[in-house]
Length: 586
Image (cartoon, rainbow, N blue to C red):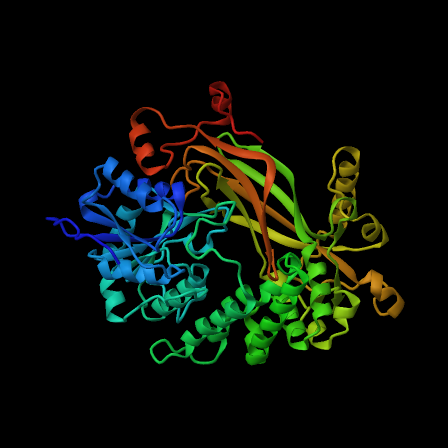
């Protein structure tokens, strides 16, 4: 390893930013420039790049930019022997760090201007060992629920909320890392950051968040090659890494006893990282040989886990778990094809701007399968208070899979909400939303024609059909036992007349002056979106044609808003915005 001694400093180092690099190229400069543009004085933090023996010009680019910006006292590049993964470079950077806190950043990501200042202040205010700054995803889905309210003392031993953020892109107290000898696994180990973060979360009850300012920009480039750990994922080693993550729950200092909470922790990796690999489009996108490898590897893991581990899985993955234990590859592929066509189709029922500058949206969505004219409502069989997904017949013949297909509880716990997404910056904000689920009958016409989502008269006719059905059945809320339809007791009529589909109805309001946790929305374009999550299916779809345009601040607030990225003051009324040429489009 080659490194130069850092320059002597008069001011203590508050934060050490540690960045592993490998053949990152020009994109590495985005992160460096974001560090050097921090509102925290350069004398109060340091940046340590640990290069994993890049074969391109990454090191030269960094050194030239550091020199050009006169930042030799702030940033340096350490050349290390090639390890092939980010674990060892992160350990090296941590060993060299002098800051009170260490912030790990990937080589293709960047920080917002006030990130270090706000996160450090939050750590000092709360005494936290770990601080998680709000994230925005670019080509990735960043966690959102974790940042809906301020958190000062999160504890993974009592609350699974922290499972939403298992990456290492956080602020860690360096004394905490030393005390518990927290190190990254070295070598080519998948999920090495999850092993590190899970241990850290289980060793402290002092985790805080910065919920009202987007600190971290998490980037996935389209070619997928701008990351130290980019490689094709091999099923066997990947599942073995999942075992290593789960083994943290059995280590003496991080032991979590059997029970409901442990099952919820296990489900994070057993479900999202293992079973999800053999479900839906993720399985079908693999070549046939690789599909078999994934099914074998995940099936072996499923066989090792106790059946009660399935209880914390979302309903759709409980079905997959049953099929994985059953071991029939063809059935898993058939279920994957069935799931791959499931989506939610949103539509705006009405939207209007209020005189005070707020936008209110009423929208609805159906769970559907298929594409285009072949789209049909997702069907459930009503059986007393059960709502059983109508599975493909061969899958339904597997008793364990059919027994896990009841979505009644999952629908009651659905995640339905309006959102806005900043088109330029990537920040996604959840909005307070009122919603309900309405059951609609699936009859011959619905099964034959489905939910039309086209244009013109076809779409209008479909809208009228569904609106009429909704009026007729509006009292049949899912939270209440539904009345059985005529003929329900007859076997012949049951197959058709007991089928229902689900319509999610919601209303939410966007107040541009307060939508970001009481603060104004940042200047730019905010796309209005509708998210539906049910039983493990979750997607967020834009409500096309509906955006909120926030103008750049002017006058006395311009300097403040430019510094924080927030719009200051109240957004003008629609009339004033039209006059100014900045009206929100709906």
